[in-house]
Length: 339
Image (cartoon, rainbow, N blue to C red):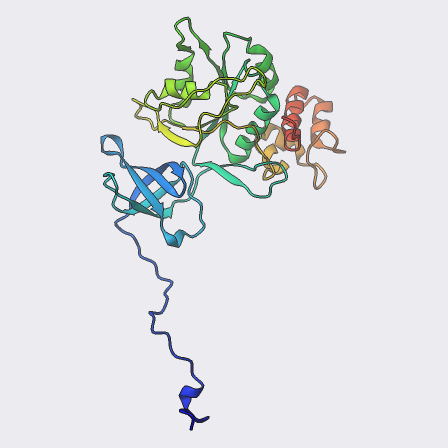
């Protein structure tokens, strides 16, 4: 005879799971402390917690409730757990505060996935050598487009001016109003022009980007002597540098009380702009933007667009033809893959 018949409740009911019910309530983490992400390495985050003489380096991991939310260099975070910074200690990142700015790039122009390079930066410094390796204006253009799209102030840093005249390259960007600094090697191998660079970086969170071999790591080591970023050489055959920086790192500029920081990034050979929309780019040029109010719907403001307000402004003398041409060169850089 069966143990249960058709009238027994247990014949129909599945055994109950004796687990605690899930709740949407999350701990408040009132004891969390503030920190900034200095570098990221395979799921482990190096943070700087505290300020001034009380600052300390803390290792942390991301708390599970953050899920797939990315944490990148420059993020301001809240941390719980062991924040002493002692060897072997490990804290938990429980919150990422809203980002003021986000610098993005894609692997190429067909890649729909955006990759955040750094958060909360205020300035993008495009480091390029005037020779050895030769400048690549198209990549410079694309970096400027990314800066304008992210709301970062651009700055050109031209190195090796002892080997080539900077005016040739500067003439290309002067109409855009992009500021610049120029450095060169002195007879004793020191970097001349470094003081002007420091002045431009003061009070900013500056992201340094550039090709391998342009002298970016050398510049970082001069600005932050304790950084000890590896420097490389330029291949005589390809004219390209060897990647020396392998990950982005946030560095405090020494001796400054105004919050100056630099972010050194690995040398780049591509800067995808699939995420940039033309309407965002024109907004970075308010004087030109106001001239496009009567453009047809969907106008990209490119040189082949019919009835574009920029063409009318140039024809009437209201706009500088060179400035419009420079803007359209940046616009075209979004779709030029040969750089």
